[in-house]
Length: 464
Ligand code: AMP
Ligand code: ZN
Image (cartoon, rainbow, N blue to C red; front, side, top):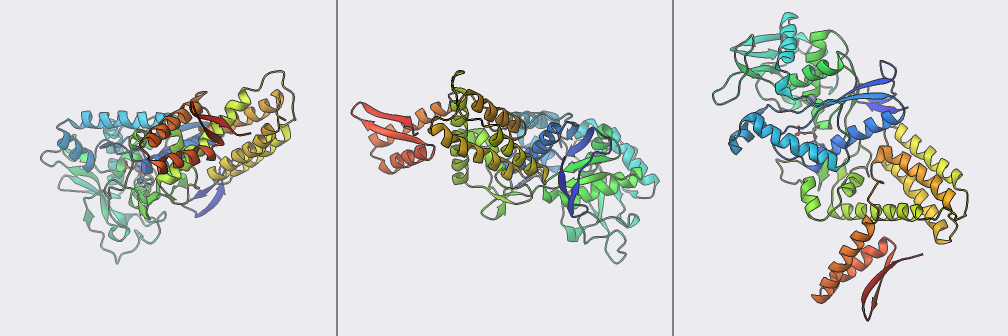
């Protein structure tokens, strides 16, 4: 079914769910204080691939993705926009859901919001205090790292058993490995912050406790898989383990899956660096969102992917060719005879399955699709593809698309894109912008489309 790299054991392992037939998967979701950037979306797309791949193998997947709707950033965001915390976070949750749908990321089984699970957080905090893993101080509650010798197993290099370290307290949710210290589970009320009642007085939850509480509420004490980008390994996931295992005494997560970052010029794409694009930005620039989905899958998830607009152009062109190919296959008349393509399709399918089964290798899986397209295009050019051959290839493509989500398209959408470029080229020529006009000609040529300038205006035709 799936060999997947487990950050905890640091090797690829054969995945089987604990309960046969049902996979319990939790992904750390967005902090809804702003519109997500496409780096965030790369991580959520990986969860989507994982879910789609598992479902295609015939198992049920209970995938939970939380919505972080209370933390420093959302509280500050609500203040900035003059909204209540709920109004502010609902607004960005809606944007987020729209972005997921636009990218064909399937809806999660559950999208719990942190602020709806304060009681479940209290239960875990109370259990931790009870078992000597947490202590109260001035209305806040902290996890006591020294009480938990296994602390640090996931990220390495910190250990709760290290008595020489300074494990004094820390109120921030985000900090570096070298600053590992007792972290806040519950934060005492501050003026101007939303608060909830608790057995330790009014306050609000720390960030990490929410994932322990919501994963347990929907999936139980032990999860099959947990997904989040590499920056969450420490401290977030390390702290989730300490909280959950400290409270329940059970193994928290069997497989830890950590996709790498989307980067820009060697740096992580992030809000704070300002080097980010949102899906909306790119759609406004005329890109098809499915080209973004394609681009985000062109590198294996455990490798960084460098984002460039040139790369996105290439994805858009690759998709244009693929969609055009599908349109041509669908247009082959029912009585057209041609080669039997069952073997070619079966070979592509075997490659496709092997690629996904080997640590979700999406680029290799897409290559199986594009290689088949290349071969069948050659046969199409020679008029050798009949109706049954086309049906064999289309069946494979539809099956592959249940995981990839890039092949389905509106018929004729390629033509509409070509027409738009033709119009732009006419304008460029009228403006004597020959460079742009030539660029468009080359772009179309790369999609197998030839422009002919005739006395009555420019026309285009497909080659072959
Ligand atoms: P946030 O909304 O900041 O909580 O982040 C949501 C998810 O996106 C988390 O899993 C982050 O680790 C992940 N993430 C943030 N930046 C990037 C990036 N540049 N590339 C990939 N994932 C990212
Ligand atoms: Zn989390």
